[in-house]
Image (cartoon, rainbow, N blue to C red; front, side, top):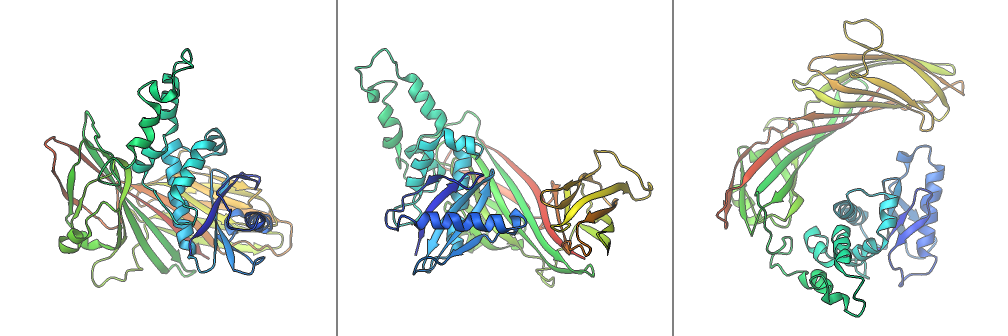
Length: 448
């Protein structure tokens, strides 16, 4: 089974763009929209809504898979034995395509480019619900980006109404459709030329971990991806090798990668697409003898939370275990649906209680989401930061969440220490510039 269709809802829950549902009852898409809106209304927080919502109004089982982007909801409906992961993979790909075309995905952007969005939807999802062309390089030859359309329309002279538009400004009609799939390589355009040839690699690793009440790590995994930005002329054939490829496992590659070469000698041989693309996804494999779910966590949290009547008090101490500076550290605690307010003071270890500078940290209480948020822009190596405070609640026995959500970033660092050995170019005679950058981030659930 495949995807039934795609619907985009505005922030008020109203459909603004919808694929064709000609093979389904008229009420089919509206029932899924209502099911999602009802689930959002009942949810205490936006993040607590199940990403897969089942609809039982029809004889065949169906569901809607949804994600939130720019305040809007992208909804893909599925039925029968369809795998929800297929729907989420298509949603992520379609949203990435919109980012490539428009830069930002917002309600105003989609309203200004309704025609382009519908064309993209027609080219990426067929009437049977199977994904079609999802390569941005191939799509740009079929569906003209808005900037190119503006240039083409501007080149048509309004003073010559009798001349067909396809004969002005260099043939309007041939610029788009005739160039589609002109290249023998599906993911790369033909005749690409650059004055300065370069390719950049960003190795981005994401830690996802759960820490128990006793401070012991229950699970800690690191997932990485190699993001690339290619600006190379002609048809370059590249070979990328690593000094320690054994740290990569469960790899998934861009279609340009030759799998036999990776299986044989753990090198990536490929002809890159033009522009930005993800070359590879992988999971970090610790050295032999280590437990794969026990990657060291670069910070620690000591939490003392006391709940009383109509509120509670807390003292939170964040300590860095990283030799690198951690940036954009965020800690969130849901204080319960009946929370009214919170009061906190910030300090750093050894400085005594008192407010620290805004450059070091700040706290806020979101009265709508009932969320206490603590932010530290720069957490220096081996430093400690303390947040003391209290909150009030409407009910006698408050019920805050028993887990903190922590996020952080570490620039110029990778958990796996993956290192690029060399990048070789064949098929072209020019010299190219190669750039490699490491970046890590994390998302932790720390229970108390």
